[in-house]
Amino acid sequence: MKILVIEDHEDTAKLIKKVLKKEGYAVDYLTTGAAGQRRIELNADDYDLVILDLMLPDKSGLDICKEVRAQNISVPILVLTAKKEREEKVMLLNSGADDYLVKPFEFEELSARIRAITRRPKKTLPTELKISDLILNPATRKVTRDGHEIDLTLKEFRILEYLMTHSNQAIGREDIISNVWDFEFDSFSNVLDVFINKLRNKVDRGYPRKLIQTVRGIGYKLRD
Image (tube, rainbow, N blue to C red; front, side, top):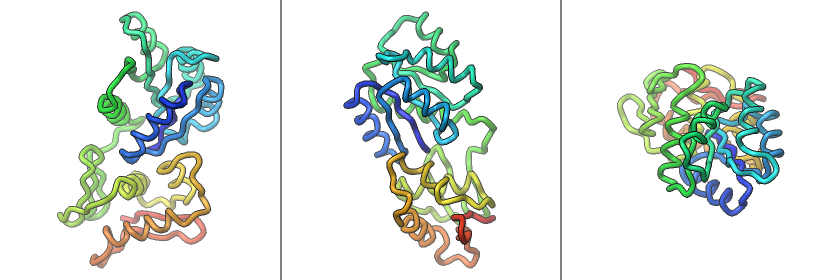
């Protein structure tokens, strides 16, 4: 899952990125409203969520929210606000925000809000992803094959989750990287291949049916 943070206080943005990366999210951040809005308009499909500060110096988060929604951009938006008035919260929701969080906040609550918002997909998805005898539960982060639990790191889990949500499709390396790592990741490195090999050892080793397939010249595919 990939998140865009738009927050003018860079130390705060870096802290949010640091905390969310520990939970396995890929995070980019920008420190101006104008740059943030351009990124949303040009790359909305690259992100699963936008965390948007309300009080940006060059352009308000409220205006950004209104303008991107006017362009039929549907990426979920979580607004960070220092205002506690009920009218302000109602205005945010009416302007297209999916949720809001009042500053100062606990990171546990931020993580809970993110999970709640991202459980509201554009189309209804099952609570469990199932390919052959491989089952992944996004909420509990539990993965089993043939009833046996598989212990995955957060990054391995995110890669497998992305492959399973696009099962039987050839997924390009760039698509996987852009959804699991942040904007600054070196796509020419072999880190993805290393993680895929680790996943194969955990998911396919010892089973006659190999689910993780290499698609030559493109990337990878999880085949049912």
